[in-house]
Amino acid sequence: MNEPVIDLQGVSKSFGRTRVLDGLSLRVERGQTFAFLGRNGAGKTTTIRLLMGLLKRDDGAVRVLGLDPQTAPLKLRARVGYLAEDQTMYGWMTVEELVRFTAAFYPTWDHDLALRRLREFELPLRTKVGRLSKGQKVRVGLVLALAHRPELVVLDDPALGLDPIMRKQFNRDLVSHMQGAGTTIFYSSHLLDEVEPVADAVAILDAGRLVRQADTDTLRADVKQIVVARDAGALFEGDRVLDRRTAGDELAVVVENAERVCQRLAGEGAAFRVVDLNLDEIFEAYVVGRPEAEDGTTNRIPIAAD
Ligand SMILES: Nc1ncnc2c1ncn2[C@@H]1O[C@H](COP(=O)(O)OP(=O)(O)OP(=O)(O)O)[C@@H](O)[C@H]1O
Image (cartoon, rainbow, N blue to C red; front, side, top):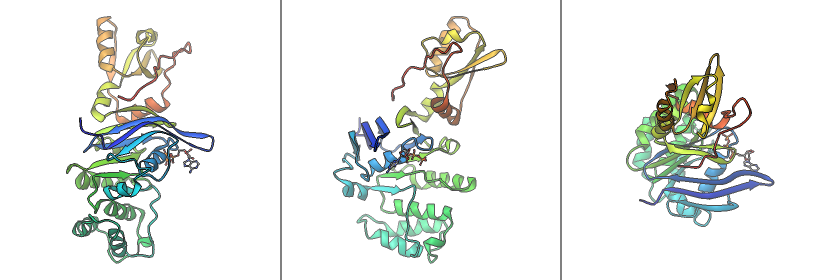
């Protein structure tokens, strides 16, 4: 198998006495569009800063494009397009000046490509960056992150602060300008609806721990809600239950390995129905699901990355 583009193993990071990342392992393959999901404060930006060599880890190993970002940050930056969450731009420069200024840092800069993207994004070249709208600034950030033709694009919550129409547009930009052509895209988000149509793979981070990493299609096929009679909770003993809730006479249980669970239930002659979940519902089951039975016992098994 090819070397992964991003490879984190057992990475931990604390700020003072607060442990923000706790033994995080993650693997992103070449050409993937990979969404890194987590609620506010889960540790996404911290992970991205570690990937970019902007922070030092306390423990574990990090390789990005085969390099350790901590010891080779500049080499890495030349090969990565990075859009920070709080991208600070030089507001007093015009768009054109900012593009020329940034170009000077990258030997592989493709100025024609930059101009083409600026045109496609309908960005006004002679307007000062400080006067652009939030959506326009994100697009300038994307142009700057892409025009040196990086092998890897790392975007920290790029749709943050954009209105729903602009977020859809951003997704279209992602698909039309970055996907394909072998570029690997790693981006953090908490906007599940928008991630779902574009991400090949996702990782779900919760309080600094990885709760699941999988291809998006695999995840949707694997995690389902199974509805049984209210008193039939014992059917799921030993299963990986993520969430369990009752409604009227029914019990709805979200499980991993749904196909295997369904085969078993069918074999046992149990009455049940299966509900497909979208990424948003799956995410919710992992990070806020309540797997406990009414007697307080739990059968959520600690979950490892695939
Ligand atoms: N330099 C720092 N010093 C102290 N605490 C920090 C620092 N950077 C991050 N933290 C804390 O680490 C935790 C994780 O922050 P991080 O920014 O990585 O989360 P996030 O998943 O990106 O959140 P969001 O979606 O809100 O941007 C938070 O509790 C944050 O307050």
